[in-house]
Amino acid sequence: MGSQRDDSIEEQILKLKKERNAVILVHNYQRDEVQDIADFTGDSLELSQKATGTDADVIVFCGVHFMAETASILSPQKTVLLPEKSAGCPMANMITDEQLRHKKKEIPGATVVTYVNSTAAVKAESDYCCTSSNGVKVVSQIDNDEIIFVPDQYLGDYIARKTGKTMTLWPGYCPTHVRILPEDIIKQKQEYPQAKVVVHPECRPDVITLADEALSTSGIIRYAAREDVQELIVGTEVGILHRLNKENPGKKFIAASKKAICPNMKKITLEKILESLETMTPEVKVPEEIRVRAKAAVERMLAIV
Image (cartoon, rainbow, N blue to C red; front, side, top):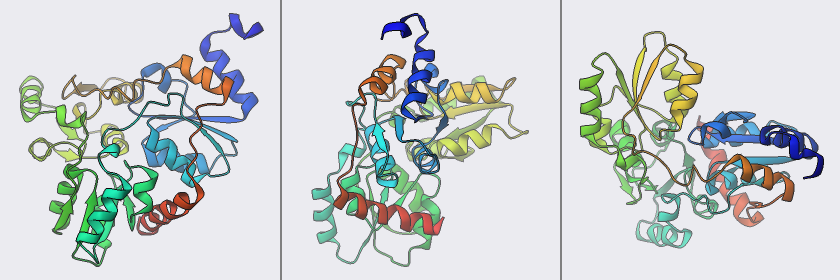
């Protein structure tokens, strides 16, 4: 690294970022120091949409593999880097495109709604994508009584209860969110009786029942900013607490469970970001035939919301 050696790692990243005309997108669950060097922090779809609006040539996506794929789907002309190749999403890997094709044959005529926490190949087999924040709206607008929802059974159950629709749910789940148990919420409520409770809809139904609201990460951030919220028990991956504390000084945020840590989200470090910008690897590129079909499912969602 030559003359850069005396600079801090953050300074080296910022220099290289400028040279490469790169933008650094960081998910709300990333390490604190990674969030602190972000150009944009947010949830997966929010970040990919931000990327399309920048004139950057390179997107450094600090998240997990499916998120980098979504950025590639929406910005095919840009180079998308995922600083840690092995940062995957167990839930996204719980269904393959082949399994989804088989399920579609079992229920012909069904509309397939796929959570954005999925691979590009699975999105390509879908009619609509949805996020945790717009899933209820997307499903309620679909004029079909037969809906296959993949891969998250708990988000699917939440949407089914909110819309009253009968949906065939794939048995996938987020290993991080299922670590949050009802007794965790009850315990924290006893300790902080004035606190509101907000959880992610990837949580189990018996956890969602105990919450004041079930919201996406961006929804949790907006909720935390409300004037009537001074103490908040937060039922999602603990990485979000860094941003909540930074943006809301004087308020108290309590993790529903300290076990809610996504190991894949913590794989990306400042060192790996620097190396990624130096070597321009690992690159994530979605094959064009899959990209076009996956993009159609995303665009149908965006047309509704």
